[in-house]
Amino acid sequence: MMKEEKPLLVTSEVALVDPSDSKATKVQWRFTEEGQRIRVSLRSGRIIPLSKIAEDETEDMVMKSAYTEQDWDTKADDLKKVTFKPALSTFEDDIKQLMGVKDPRKRAPTFWY
Image (tube, rainbow, N blue to C red):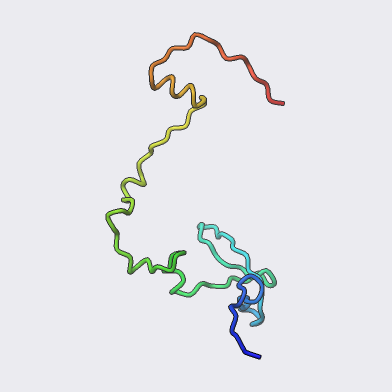
């Protein structure tokens, strides 16, 4: 026989500790009134705080404070620009309007029940 280490399954073999009784508990993500995302114990309803390191870490394990912006990153000014203006017309109607095509036909009414 050979002993071999195997990884733990995060979904079924690892659990967070409830701060009220120091026992393992399931966790649910919720939002506060301010819009902050928090972890809540399902058994007692108490908030399980994130560590300071986890708050500064992104999903791909990069520290936000240590990240330097690269040339290929999207700039903050570009993110704030509004590039889409919604309208109640079909894709074909939008193309016709952009190209200046006049269509004398009337669309048959459709009814949704």
